[in-house]
Image (cartoon, rainbow, N blue to C red; front, side):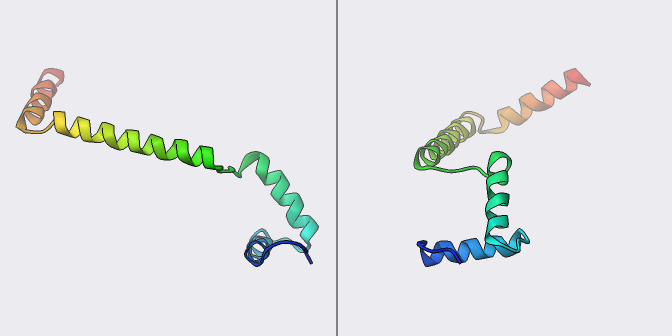
Length: 86
């Protein structure tokens, strides 16, 4: 058994042990260490903050594009462009 960890962490480790089909804690640890290099992304506070800022900037850009491209003129321009391409 693992000692010195919180109940929540222990529950998560037990869930992973079953999910990853590990018979022993050592086998689970080995799989987790190997997975970390390839499949696991550690999200720290700085990464979360930068991702959140990126989402906010994308939403601002979407709003600006929507504001500028409103109205029938966009559709008309698109149709005119397609007539020239075809």
